[in-house]
Amino acid sequence: MKTYNLFYACMALLVLIGCSKTESGDSGNNGGEKTVQANYTLIVNNQGNLSGTLFNVEDEALTIKTEESKFTSMSTPDLSFDENSVLTTYTTKTNCSGTLTVHDFNDNSNVSFDVFSDLGACNLTVKSIARKGNKLYLAYELHITSTLDEFYVRALDVSVAVPTFVDVELEQRPIELAYANNRLFVLGLDEALTDENSITAIDASANSVIHTQLIGFDVRRIFTNPANNIIISYDNLHSTLNSVTMALSYTSYGEGKEPNFTESSTLHFDSAGKMYYQMSPTAYSEFPVIPAIYDFSKNLTVLYAYENFMTETQLNFEFNIEKTTMVSYDEENDLLLIGYKKTSGANKGGLMLIKPAPDPELLNSIDVVGIPTAIFVN
Image (tube, rainbow, N blue to C red; front, side, top):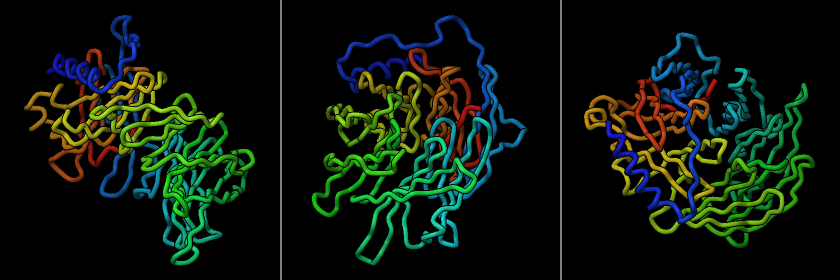
């Protein structure tokens, strides 16, 4: 087990990819040995269908539970939104409407809502979805003619027996949604005038646009951070939009030091604001996608290159890792949860438990049928 090599690699990359801010000590298990006990629901993509499998961790032993998951299997959705152990998905139905499904892993409740029955989904395209409590949001394009589109956000209130909705018209083509401080933020594209990206803020109580501003070119994505502000990410920097004042601050990475989180399909934050995600490591690993942790407060990235904490036999014969497909973190037990696709088959994957830096260690791994896409702590 090359734990020393991984620690050295992580520290080297901390220097290389991070900035020159003073570091403070990381929190961890400093009070002696701690018994690890946890239950997880792993969501896998099995030949175009999502299904859930229950796992149990007892110390370092990872086992599949015989009990069936309460997660209702479904075809791979068009869009998904994951926050606070709640998975929201949107799927287009054959009758040209759409379905929003909300599965809460906290209490294993599952509820679905039909949307766009008033319009018919055949003449519209949903671009992004978001959820906050009993409010569900869909940004969509309504295709009026072959050359004319209209843009809206539909706010669906599901707190009442018969859900109600309001459509908020947008000036720019919507790309992605994020929610913070009772405001919905829409990443858009100003095709009519500047070809720049834009941010539009919608008051979630009044369902009305309260602010719009251009934010430059080539924005890759937006999302909400634990401080309840909006991260706007580009290739070589990100900006933080204060969700109350709308003030922008910028963090530049420098060439060769980019954390590369814009393409990650999963973003998971811990209570300290560190983000766990899938990264294209460029020159730092032979694997195309590896686990990574980005600390926004320090502009610091830790990479977990598989070759630095697994033997050649493990890599080539035992685990057959092709690429990382999911990264999460069990904060209570201080465990990295890594989902990966295998090279040995198109529908073969695995789940790996890793003790994170400063004393990284591969604890266990288990094979699964399907490709891991998300995991929830039960």
